[in-house]
Image (tube, rainbow, N blue to C red; front, side, top):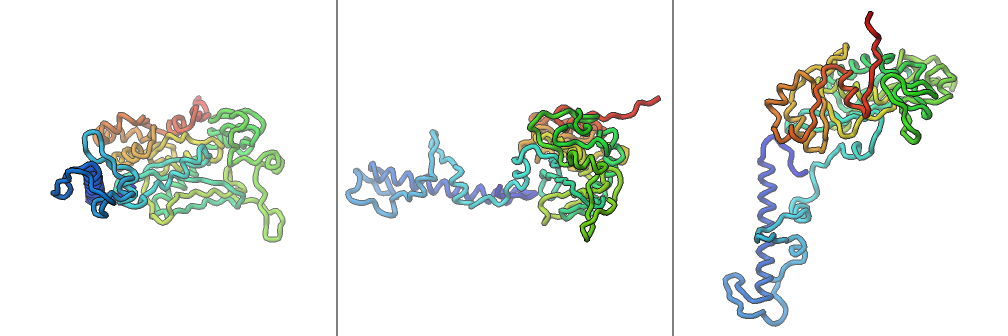
Length: 358
């Protein structure tokens, strides 16, 4: 929370400041105890407690008394209060903690990124709204990651039927499930949710069904106009955002995460909150290897993630680069295709209804 760098110089400074503060507080506490019960203070032997008020030089400051704590072995203990007193408020808070604490939200998926100071967790958000069928990308994204978003959208569009996301099977607040028909059970790729489950962000209800399965698009004069877009984008805009917009982002390892975010958005089924993922995706749905596996898995471990989905072709990197202590506490799931990713990203799995081969 106080240092983030490739080396350890900043960490060394912080530890040195805490050690000095703990030593000062321990010395003050020792002097104060000696003054009260008789002893040696500054080389002077006190045979008995001094009469009258204790000198300001030997009195223990109330703040120091609250921050000081001596362990059973006589070693000063650094407390949280001492850290905040010496180093101040945390400089690097968990920018994604608010997204994780918001619970199960369709369209929000935890991805793993590589930075110059190590790995990090980057939550990807997706939202749908009435529109002319466009895909909007925000978060100061580079060209490569923008291409990943378009590939993810194309893959979801081309596999909409297998995912149960066809235009006549949009989940409604009553039906739930991944791509189940309105009023029916969850279709391919989903299970019918019980009452009280959050409705899909892609759902529109009976009024949408009556209008041909798309949002009405209003013109400048209030009249309905023909909706733009095709397939899942007919009459709708999709917005993909990567938080922390002040930080430039680029790279080829967000395709899998964006695919999951879009499937979660359209189906109304949230991705497991204990799961993060990394990997690039092709138009055929293959999960391609990426770099920075060591840093990404360490970041997942530090942020309390229990399961990580990685490309199957990166397993050798996991075995040779990731520390054994990290591998022992993470469930690492190798994925070769998007079908593997969806099956492990959603609670209960997500089955693709692929056509049988003759």
